[in-house]
Image (cartoon, rainbow, N blue to C red; front, top):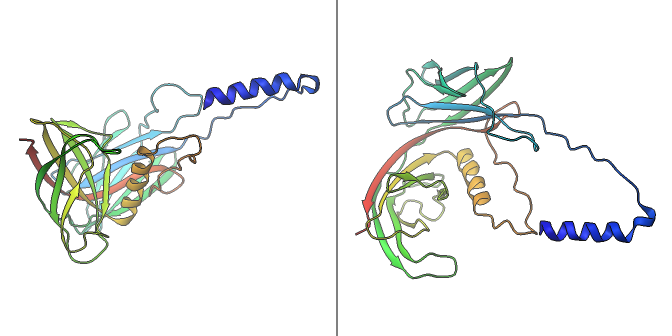
Length: 264
């Protein structure tokens, strides 16, 4: 598509050379924004928060880390934890422990600017098991052993989940998956995870219970990831993060359930 646009532009330029006008466009870099990546779970800590900055359109290299910030994580039961910087843009908790049913608060002071967020940690439905079902190749499905995850959703709509998926101990970043209980409310769920494995593969699934704002954030990321990128698709918008003061990213809190199985 890009080549076609360039070709069309060149043809138009040749056609209208008699009325040529030179227009200079200034390519401006957007103002840099703070990016926050943080997660508190009910697994044993410590937990980490990463701070970085967005790059301009013409910038090269990795996103710059944000160092020397004052980062505090607290909960609604009186625990206040000032994080220690342990690497480039990486801050680690020292005492806070994630607990389902608690609300967690994030606050960072960067160059005199204050950024904040909060996230409620809902309980997570315990994962029961993983099973595998062989499926032949279809139009949008790969051939192989498709994993199905089994769990009972609590009664009452409004439960949301996200998965981390590991195949042979390697995190699969392209398999971002989120789910609401709109279809599974109060029932025993059998969810096709939508990808294929082969015999001997080991699958590990971490299921995170998340609140509704986190669900919207991760769903937007999943939709962007699954976008075909066709010429007539709209440009993806930034995922709706929960950081104040114009920052990007997400600070979340999740209870976690884990299950593992090998494709036999």
